[in-house]
Image (cartoon, rainbow, N blue to C red; front, side, top):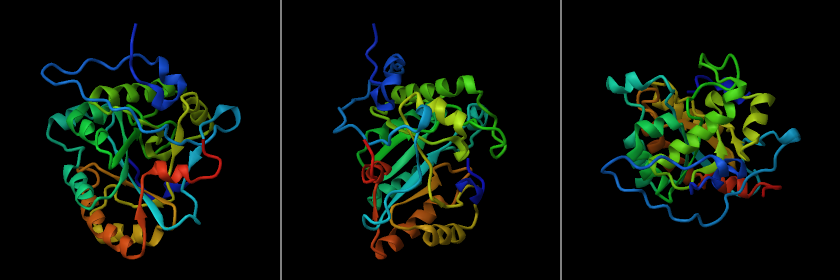
Length: 283
């Protein structure tokens, strides 16, 4: 979860969405008893990515072109850390169905960055999002532990386990019924360094950051969050928000206000993949 504006600083599993390195990640687990296997339609085309950086480091995407029209991508982090199961069992809500329903009602495409732990907790919702062409689902790690030290108090993933944590999340998404996770990765807390970029770069992903911090995490003033978004959006912007009721309770209200106002300003809502596809040098 992002806490402040500072974050701008044998098998037949289909694993190609995370690049060739995941092609050998193994098959997803069998569906739960009594639950039919989800349909897995073939993707229309290979999603656009950016070329790797020096030494195979994952490329980092912040926003789309500023000169290709008034487009904006709303992104939502479905956060749940590996150790929050007891809190969920006690009744804490790490999902936000009302927000997803608002996006559907307003016909707003969006990119959901989902942790594997969240997918395990809410497989029906993950399946629904993964099968809805209005949305695209991407990887947000399994554990939501930080990939650097000193990242908003999050526990950390060791360098040796970074790659496997991302692979484990990919498997969890497939298991929940997300047929084609996008080859994009968002670092927990938005925290990364060169070591982390090299680790996830082995999986062929594009790391997706943002240029607009909504400030919805732990916010209680929807008007303040709305203003921050509206003041920050520019053509090609990527807005980071959250779809976690307990930690971002105002987000649904914010979206209901922000969307019509941005549309009045001439903005068109798109997924991250469209912005990356408009970026020079994409592949």
